Image (cartoon, rainbow, N blue to C red; front, side, top):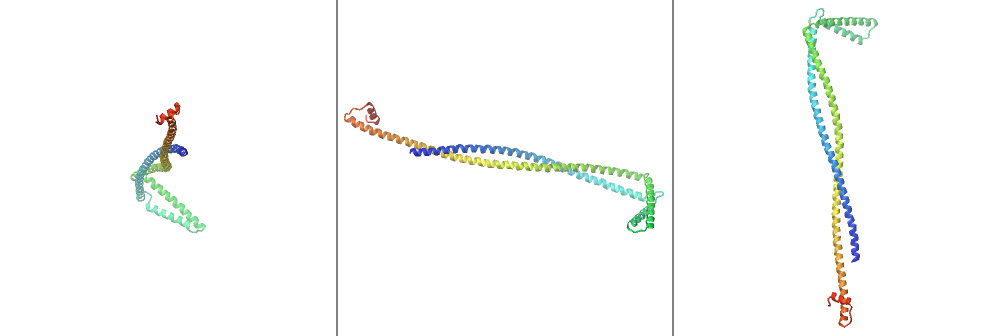
Length: 295
């Protein structure tokens, strides 16, 4: 019985160490899991914040795109008006009766100049022919310039032409101003797009890191639960062993008591026989008889 008790007590001590170790590892895993959960939550909050910032920039970009589209339509409207005004200018210029300048004669000279230039460029000529064509081209060029200059000078005094020129300048200035503003906004849109792409990349990296922290949290939470279950099992085993040890100790004590009582009865019986035979007993002998219930 003593050997069995010692063996179980040794096993109990081993299990007790296991209980302490499982508690320690459980608490470490739980603490680490809480750390990763906190870091995960911080990063998830940052992801939400960055996502809202990206949404704002996307909204700003879309507003600018809408603005640019309207401005482009407005610009095209100014350029369309400008084109019509220039057509009207050319129509008046080519049909106005200008003193000393016959529009038909001017057009004929321009066609002739074009014909000579084409001939000079495409036809193989001898030196005499080449000089003649060059001379004619120079003459026609000077005549056309002179006629156009005279025409333009007289047209400057034309009220309708002045009005058209004023409108042309106005539409051109408005169109150019819009074009310049559109270029500025387009550059701004490009900068915002680059910023959005950069933030999205950063957001994706932060989100991936948050996911990694979440995976660590899950892993350590499961480890903590597993350690807790092992602790419960070891604790229950320890309790069972304590019960067995207590039971063995109780039985051992009872057995020793019975053995002691048996020896007492045996000794008392011998002493009682002596007492009946009239032999002299000591005080200690009398106490034994009294304890054994013989007196």
